[in-house]
Structure formats: C-alpha cells, structure tokens
Image (cartoon, rainbow, N blue to C red; front, side, top):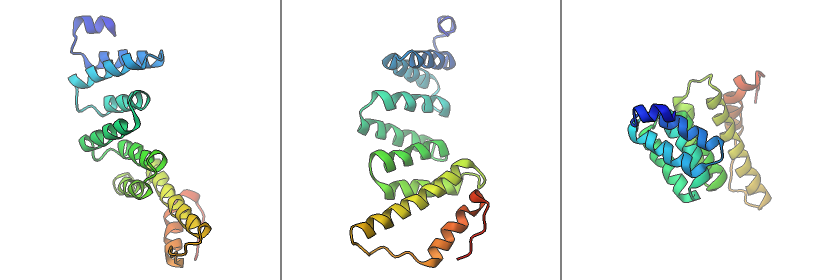
Length: 168
C-alpha cells in the first residue's frame, strides 16, 4: 500500500489498506488519520465510511461518534448497515428506544423482506415492546395496553423467521 501511495498519493484504496493495517496493529490514531485521507479522495464510498465508523467508535468520545453516525446516515440514507449501527447505538448506548424503534422500522421498510437485517430489526422491535411492557408492569404502571390483535400482528411478522404457525 505504501508503494502505491508513493506512486499515487490520491489512491483512496491504498489509503484504506494502510488504515486497515494500522487498525489491526492497534494503532487507532494512525488508522483514523489514514482512513480520513481515503475518504477525502473518495467521499461517497460507503465501505470507507463504514471503516471510518469502526475506527471512530474506538477513538471518538461517545457524543462525537453519534454525530459521525448521523452524518454518515445523511450521506447514505438508504444504507441498512448505517441505519442498523445507528439504531443499536440509540438503543444500547443512548437509551433512546423510541428513536431506535423508528430506525428499526425504516430498516424493515427498505431492506429486502427475506434479509437477515430485516428479520433482526423485527425481532428488536418486538423485544423493545416486550421490555417496555415488563418495565411498566414491574413499576406498577399499567398504562401500556397490549391487545390480542397487536400480539397476533407481531407474531405473524416473525412467523417466517421461526417457521411455525401462530394463531391468536
């Protein structure tokens, strides 16, 4: 990769390879600098942006990393991979389940029906709904209403994942 950069310092793929090598060696600051150089030469390459986000998760403060995720989502609004990363971040780190649920629904809308990511997004929505219900019951709050129709819809949505028939 270094030889390629000597011949052509604008070779984004070579910069990316250097970044990956630095990252594998645990040199995260160098990895970040070199992937940013790759992005400078190819700003609309999704794979390079994903590499950057993997590195940024290690190098940036939490709030700044979230801003970077949002920025990349704005560049690639139809990327289920970016939406997934953002949804997981909102759910697991930011503790914002409603925002995560919106993103999971967006994934379900744009991903192929039979894709693993769409199926996982459906499962995450059901788990989040169940967690909200259990928390409300545990805290003595009964303001959550779950109807048989809603349960039936949720089970029907994951039926193809479990290969079982549900009848409610």
